[in-house]
Image (cartoon, rainbow, N blue to C red):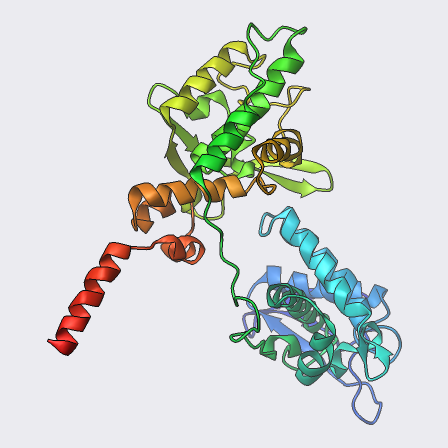
Length: 410
């Protein structure tokens, strides 16, 4: 039986009724089906959403009954549906949606009271079950456990809307303790500082396959090899994320003014499907970054030989003259081999962004506001958390030490 919504003028509310016998509801402790069931909403949209949840539940076996409906496993399908809706409406990214679906799977095969957690009714799960019995079975980092717990919170939110549990979301009451005194290792991994001469050597080795002449069909492969090295050089000298660098157009570069405008990013929107979207969730992602005279010279040389040099063409292209959608190609083709030739440990493509921050801090000192702007971070606190430990003012410490000693000993 389908649940429907309607407007009650007497209370100025939209309502969804589950009074009909054909709609299954929670059972009392004596096994009898609970009576009644009117939920009110301020908006028609909210009422329609709730009715849709109820009807989806009916197809899965009822709202909450003593059969298969109302279990953790049964709640996964509506959670995935809700996640897809959020992705499609732009509330979260495709990657975030995929992570929610992956993280919720971790919980299903865990053991609780000798049974598979997936088989438990949502209404029968307590906060203590999650905190004391399930989480200890997840042998992962605190950060990963938090991400998996976030997915479980969302599952119980959906289950509550379905009518499968009437209590407060048990996962939202879980308290994760912070590891403050880890043995044998730092409690927080910090970004390592980079050696300028080593990175310069990597850039030079990566761009060693410079080709001459126009980019006709015969020389295109060699030209693209040179462009791979340019992509490495550009990343190290601008600090752009891969997702920001890949969709850059020539019109985004102001080569006469030595600037690049960052306004968009490439993101996954489906399995194997990518789309160019606005740069980021906050205004900080929209920014301009300076271009060194050296990289400007390289870009001008590339534009002369690139097969795609119009203002609306991509700066960095694949051999098929399309946009790169993964950093794997650049990392595998040019960065990894350059690191081997330079005799240093392999770098990730994102490490080039950290190198830019490292060198910028040497130039601008502790001007975290400037670094935050260049990096496109949401706040200065993000920049401080990542790079604050790099600021080491030895001269200041010596002065302070002398002043403190003089004050104490005279």
